[in-house]
Length: 297
Image 1 (cartoon, rainbow, N blue to C red):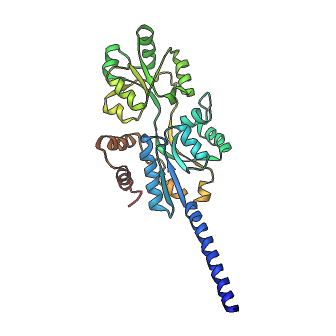
Image 2: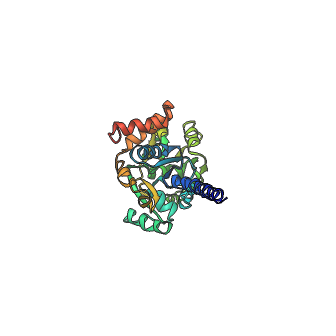
Image 3: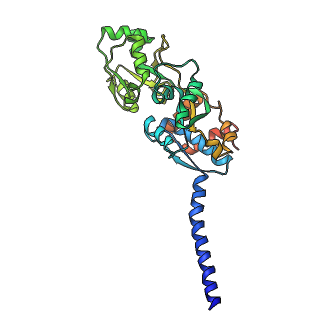
């Protein structure tokens, strides 16, 4: 009888131990899983470069959670610990997240200090900027002899016009600063960035606000007007992360450093053009780039 009870006790202990392991192991697995995200398709290539690098150089598992749709959605996902990092831009952080009304003299110091209250930080600069610009067709620029935003201001004072932009830009301080610097009187038409180019090239819009490295600018041979009053701030590309990222994942620091300043404007444009124009696979394009750079073998 004692032997039977003893066996039951041992069996019960084994079942309890197994139950504990089943609970602990998934938690351990999740602890070693890094969630990489991005806001939109334009930054998928940056997110995938980071993802592949982590997969090849560290023991961590990577979860892809791309295209969350907006700065608001992605930033809040980072704050809520739903994701661990995503590509962002200095101008977006300064104006769109930290709500500054001007460009600080020391942008990076301002960003790092401002992000402290969210327990966030910046860890990696990719090497290129992707600022907002005003685009017109070359035919429009030549017909009306418009080369700068000051020229555009003169044109809009004497002609009816239609300007398009996305809803995120008009809500930013960038827009207010632009309007103020050039004393512009605009009534913008809001639409998705893809539709902006279609409407511009079909002459439904006269000019649009775009990102300077959008593939469509080169594809449609558009003309970027000079910001002669320097009202539009630089948008340096970087990784926005949890502040304790390297404490939780020690091998990440040296790994992410391999991408520091490795992507030029021309390379970023070429990568996105390859994806959009040839329907190439995202993973293959990113992997090829990393191999050509000698970052992975």
